[in-house]
Image: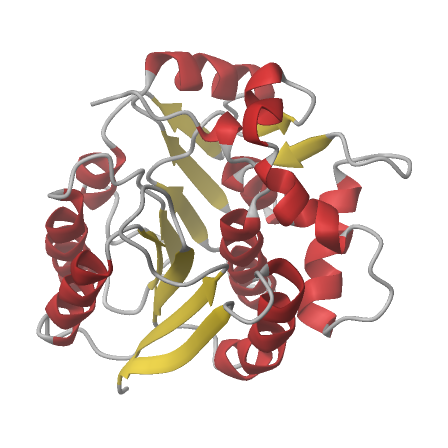
Length: 280
């Protein structure tokens, strides 16, 4: 199934948490001189014009990045994230939102490598118009979960595998756990960042339990809820599950998540989670 297009959701509250976490991991990796490898399994189009009619349909960015755009006092990691998005918006106006490929490229050094995977033909075409393949950047139109396994372990022995599926079918919740187990067996020291939506809490609880039973150690979970869980259609919360996270990440999110919940969530019903899902 290839119906999902992120342009409808670009810059929403889920993107805020997703890319804030991504940024913190990339900054941490860059603190060491040794090269690293980045793999994006579901790269998307890479670049989103917020005046596009599809982005304007629901204007989800107004409940996400737009609410943070002019904030003067906020936790440092939130300020760092907003500054990153401003880098892609010269001037004072919020007009575009970068996807994970552009954010990864922003932090990429000449000695590092980046692998971008996108199966959707239209999204792939857009991605290749935004980012050009180079010696250290490869862009492939293929199933990122399958293709990534062939890249592990990377020669650098350091890196991040960023997994951001659309969860168009409920089997994706089981598939990502199976793939993570295979990946971690090949590259045990790598950092893995998995995004998830909350549209059906039972599926999320099953995902968490599967990870607890997987044998993988050192798993942290960060979730931002905009409203209470509901049986109605739509995403009420989203989160990031990080395996082998930077040692600073949980402390930073313990400060940032309550602040984000209060500023991006609905009054009285927003929520957050910041947990060590599996011990080291």
